[in-house]
Image 1 (cartoon, helix red, strand yellow):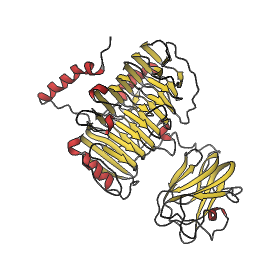
Image 2: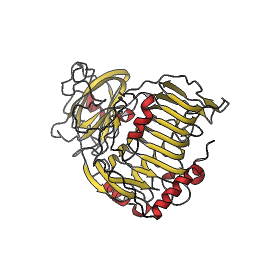
Image 3: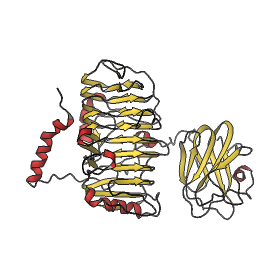
Image 4: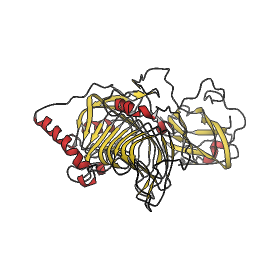
Length: 522
């Protein structure tokens, strides 16, 4: 019979206390000085997740130094890689103010920012009783760090008790090779290890260890919070977790090649219309590892290749719908990215060698043999790259062909400077133009019915060439990012059928003047 989390931890915690009293220092192995490899899973979608790639690299040994690095950027979107070494705690984490940041003293705050990498280096990075909070932010990478014992009650408290928590319009986060751990459940003051809520999308948790907690994590804070999803969990270890591995309310999640060990009450809890794709995982010494639990609002799942080793199942009830003892698929889930599965039988050994901080950022290539990634290897394929030999792949350098679909269409935007008009971008006249009220803004072309677009040509007015800096091309119907980069001109992407397409200027050297926003089917 299993004991509650807090009781099972007493022996281990006592051992640690004796080691500390004896002056024993447990050192961690040297790690890479920068993030290796690239994002996987749903974090590759919606324009991809690159964090602070290409930006300045700084070293931080305190939480205050992390905040200072954020606040010292030119803008809230200036890319930055923050290498962290040492222990980050309440005593060395202060609020720092600045135009490019919005920080707090009781947590590492990534709020209203983008294009950031936080990576543990040297002898390791430990966030002790201090959580990482991501809010209203995008394009974030967190890699090779340990976050432990974050409390929502007792003292000290941080981040609502979540080791890593995301909420409020968060997009594109990749959390990789981390160790997230607590020392008990809610009664001991802890909450979730990895929580997403209030419109958080395109997230991947990979090669991480989550352990010794009452709650692994959730996607959606309530049955009505269904704006979250597109989350991938792969090659993670969930160990000694009571429930929520994860809890999924609405949305889509993909779980593959994870090792679930000692899930004491329930595991993957798909409810409130959620869809879970569950491939080649290894479930061991656990109870009710998949199903809908604690609610009558059911979710669904698609299962394939999983191993259930000493898994027990409860009886179905009004608020209890376990998938076992013979789990079968009751939905289908289409996955938009490439992935290679390890056989479920080798998942325990592969995950043991790769998951968690300070494992050398080792990964799996589907051969059941851990690999050390080479970030500079040009032969490593990027699942989001087009096939250069495929003649159907759009080439953004080719001039557009066919009819300019913008002529005769509608137009609107986020703002307009005095004397300009949205309609000037689709009137075929290079002498008229639209300008945003400031240096950034968005302009859209729209049709009354779905129209296929594969290429756009953004023409700047005479005298303002080169003003447009960073941009995103967005499918306004779905919010998906079709392309991103810098500079106006011809931009190609995979053909998409939509009613409205938006050119969003996120950076500029002055006030842009867009003479024409042309759209083409090819």
